[in-house]
Amino acid sequence: MTYCLGIVTKSGLVMASDSRTNAGYDQVNTCRKMYTFVQDGERVFVLLASGSLSCTQSVITLLKRDFDRGEGLAKALSMYDAARIIGNEIRRVGDLDRPALERDDYKFNVHFLLGGQVIGEAPALFLIYPQGNPLQATEESPYLQIGETKYGRPILDRGIRFEKTTLEEAAKYALLSLDSTMKSNVTVGPPIDLLAYETDQLSITHQRRFMADDADLVKIAMRWQQALRVAVARLPNIRFSVAKATEKTQESIQLVESPPATEPAPELQPQQDTRSQSPPASVES
Image (cartoon, rainbow, N blue to C red; front, side, top):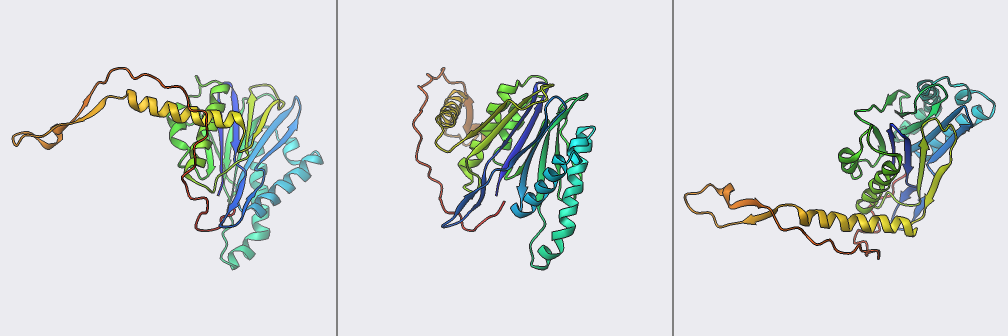
């Protein structure tokens, strides 16, 4: 499996992806899932891919071939046009490979996230489906995900706001969303690729790859875990009382404000992961 996400705010874009392509009893493989197409001062495109690795690689190969020739994405007049160009290449690969895949009971399954900016318009974020049709993120829904999305979504729903979330905050939300997913699902794993793009920059200057033992990544994960425990401690206490025969049952559970909790020092030592390190089946993504 995989997990990729894009966040668009007033300040710009944050794109992030894991690198695990399959995980089995005796094999864990990694492959970069973030690709960039840049003409400095003119256009910046960032693509994140999930699904069948062989099919996504074919789409990227065709896009790069045209881009290097000054065609395709190199001529896109808008982000929407760029999304349509990618959709056309997805359909092209589908026409080539879908019959053989489905004959052997494999599904043609590729999804892409496209983020970036073309000079003259605002940054935009699109999800492109296996059928080639695009969906655009909006101010009301300023993030998009592909792959194993459920574990990393709650923090994004609660935290991301198009007008108020800064680019730096969006980058933290992206890392925490990926950390939450890796904590609960072994088929998503490092290295983590993170890219931040500032509105109207029209070049890529903020990009980093986090390895599993990266000190900054470990620090963020441990401090977030500690902060969650402190936040729970500060919530109203749940008090259980013995219900009298004349009282309703639900009255025996009450919320009572607790005194302010003392915040402990952050735990910066990584804790042992109690998840199974061997999932039941091999997964390609």
